[in-house]
Structure formats: C-alpha cells, structure tokens
Amino acid sequence: MTNQQAPGAPLFEPDALPPVLAPATLTVTMDAIRAYGELTDDFNPIHLDPAFAATTPMQGVIAHGSMSICLLWQSVQQTLPPRVFDDLDLDIRFVKPVRVGEVLTAGGERMADGGYAVWVRGPDGADRLNGQIRVAG
Amino acid sequence: MKPTMKPTMKPMLYEDFVPGAAIGEIVLPFEPALARAWQNIFGADAGGGPAEAASMAVVMMMRAYLNVVTPRPPGNVHARQRMRLAGTPRLGERIRTVMSCEHKEIRRERRYVELRAVGTGEGGRPLFDARLSLVWAA
Image (tube, rainbow over all chains, first blue to last red; front, side, top):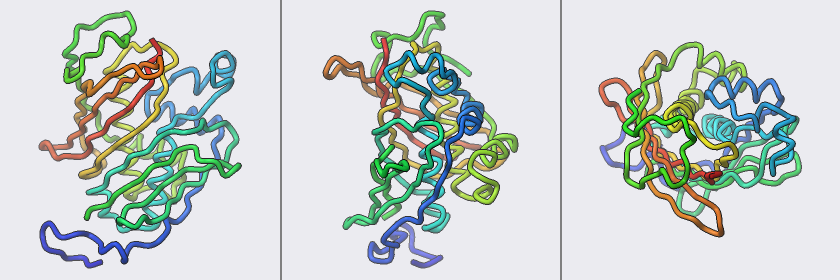
C-alpha cells in the first residue's frame, strides 16, 4: 500500500489487505430509530409506530435497513484507509429484521479475490445483512 | 425537484413502473445538521470521517427515493442494496440525485422493483450509483 500510485494501479495488493474488518457496534434504541427516520426522511410506521407495526407481517417495529449500512461503513473506516470510499462497490441483502434493543455488530472477512464478505449481526449471532464490498483493484 | 412522471395522489403501483424510465430528481444539501444528526445516532467519535461521508451517500439516496418515488403503498420491503461509491459528499455540497426504474419482475408471486439512484456533487462530481431492490407491496 502506498500513498502515491500510478493511475489505474490497484490501491492494494490482495495480500496487503487486513484479513478482517474491525468490528463496529450500535445499540438500536427507539430513539435511534426515530433519529434515523428524521435523518433519511423515512417515516414509515413500520419503523415508528408499534401499534401499526404489530399488525404487519413483521409483527413489531423494525429498524431501517440502511442504518446497518452506515454501521458497516464504520467498520470499513476503522480498518482501511479513507481513500477506499472513493472507489468502492457494495452489494448486500437485508436477510433478517433488526429489532429495538438489539446490539448490532458490523464486520467482515477478506475473500480470496481481495474483496470482503461483510455482515451486520445481531446479539444472536445471526446476520441481519450480508454481502460483500470490493475496494479498488 | 423535477419529477418527469405525471404527479399523482394515488400510490405508485407496480404497474406504474416502466423499466428504463426516469422518475425524477432532487437536489439536497449536505448540511451541518445532517452531520450532527448522524453523530447523534452513531457517536461523535465516529463523526467527521469517511464513514459519516459515505453514510451521507446512503442518506441522499434514501431521501431521493422517499421524496421522488411518492406516494408509495404501505408495506414495501427493502431487500437488497447495491451501491458504487466514486466519492463521498462534502459538507456544504449540494447533491443531485436522479431516480429511475431499472427493472421489475414478479417472482414467486412477489413484485420486485429495482430503482436506480445516481448521485452527483458540485460540478457534476460523481458520487454514487446505487440500486435499491424492493419488494413492492401493491
């Protein structure tokens, strides 16, 4: 990894990438969900209204999925140089709802091809989102 | 905001989406209040860095989706997210996000809609090219 590189040169040799992304955590409170709704203009009652949310297939309030992406960015920030955010591909699926009161942990492991398998997990160890990111190469 | 589809008070239904068609656009500033709001959720220690800036790409994408693709039927589910970052929003920068319909299909009796959100900063600086995959409720 160098600070100066030829145009088009990879940011990293795959072996130079850290093997894991440093974990980042967030406790999902109702206040945090309300604040995230304000931040994104997302006032869907499934995130904000327990009475309404109880009538849906989710059977209760769930956090905004994209909140977990913001947590994942923190894991990346703690591990890789800032410039990776200028050339990065994310591809994730939201696989399980995030509930009020859960402590989420974001992280990832380096894959053989140089990308990272990434995840955000709940306190039960199950993925809430998973997928991969690729930094410039 | 310059919607290119005819405004309507009825929710946008699956049948209203036309793959390849523009839906509209919105210009939003990355104001200090947004940074403060982000830090209120994720912690001031995490603020001011690239994670906050990259989060603003997510925020701008979601705000564009929610303000341009409206009204929506209740019960949509965000199933998958792809996002290519070519840069991150800078504090004070005005971000233009263009929304379009990329694809739609029905699988196993579910209506899948894929929306594309392309964000640029000042002078057309490329920021993000994102695809939201949603299970559309109606």
